[in-house]
Image (cartoon, rainbow, N blue to C red; front, side, top):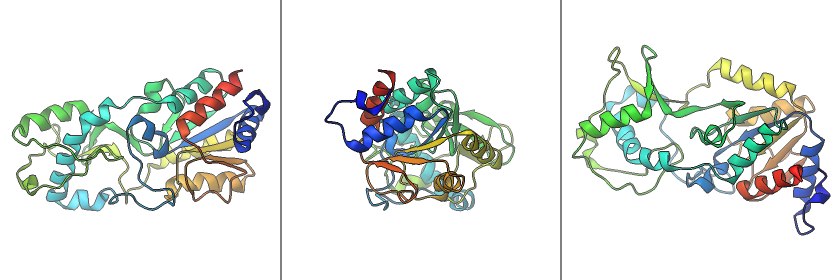
Length: 284
């Protein structure tokens, strides 16, 4: 449906984005943390792309330091219930509606919260993994995050804290001198190190996952970036790839992004509200 189906008061760039999506036969969407903020999960960066909080834990630190692992899992134990309570917002639901209508070729998300799938999306690549699964770094044994939470709370029943603020990666902003007494379970299969099945900073995205994402992008005729500053290469490379192959790029985000120069259209708006209005217009 053409952009003129929207109300006259809508921003011109939003009209253009609707028209661009309407003309597309195989749009691919790349989402970032800015999409989940309306679900109560904060994003990493401010409107200028700078860090709002300390960067997440590095893989090397997690592997080398028992203290870092105790600190990570203590914070994660405090934040997991908050993360599990998060619900898909109107933006997640709008993208699921696009898929059901046959108007979304693929969805790549940088988020680890699983909210796209909970909203009903099925053609999804979780680029950075999922927080609701834990895997052993030594033998690959996998278990649910809920199962690990039960063990963490059982082993640390006296370790009761009030989290200050939920963080984007599911832990909380929390500092405590009691980290040294926090007990972390090892892999029940081999005794190795357990880690959330997400890509930590300093860790590479699995090559087969990247290959799938690039294959889907090569099949697309439009790349729409939603809620991502694109400050990390793992997301920005898809914008560069699209631009090199003359696949039009559109950006929906509050604030600056690394891909603004490549974007044919840039819409500065709240992701959930804007996506809902866009899909309403397309379905009208």
